[in-house]
Length: 127
Image (cartoon, rainbow, N blue to C red; front, top):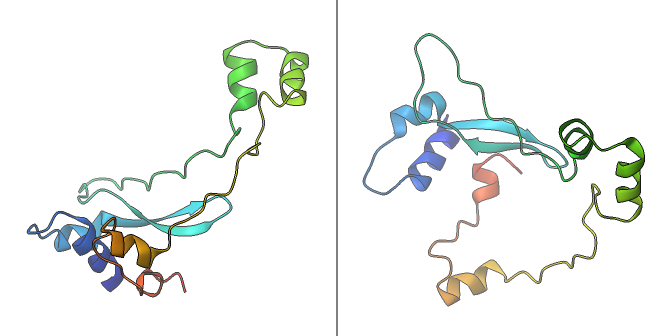
């Protein structure tokens, strides 16, 4: 409960208290593929007659290739296989490079980040 209130207090616009709403529905947990359970902002309200489900995780790269190409667009198995063979479609990134991340301390110094919470992983229960 304390974790939910902290997240809502720091993510909602300053000067507006959503702590009551956050106790009920603001923070949910979503199971993201390849990452695991992660806190996820939900709706800061609830309905009296039914429970609103937590949003599903985002789709993985290429997850709907077969459905879209075969069922929606009507391509044959051979056409889809040829596209995969030529790396037109796939489920893993190709040719990308690992970005050179700017360390958080440097972002703070440059003014790109206003506040740096070094304890966020602990506060969110990720460690």
